[in-house]
Length: 63
Image 1 (tube, rainbow, N blue to C red):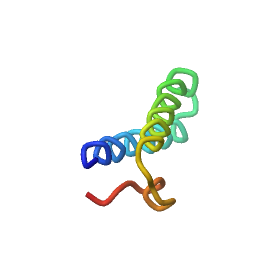
Image 2: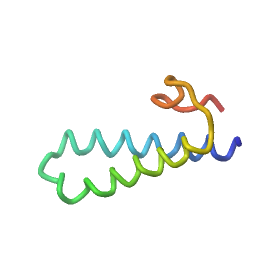
Image 3: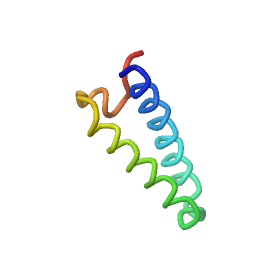
Image 4: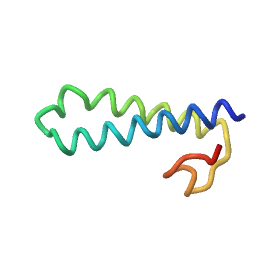
């Protein structure tokens, strides 16, 4: 379970970094939108495997 939580946290950070990048560089939207959405899909698949609070979903798990 710990490995899944660590994977979630790393993926969540990448997702937030990707969102921030797209907000700061809207001209790159078409190039990176699919990559950011695939990170979101991965996050949702992880959440199907483990229970999480709203706080954990938005900010990651305490490890």
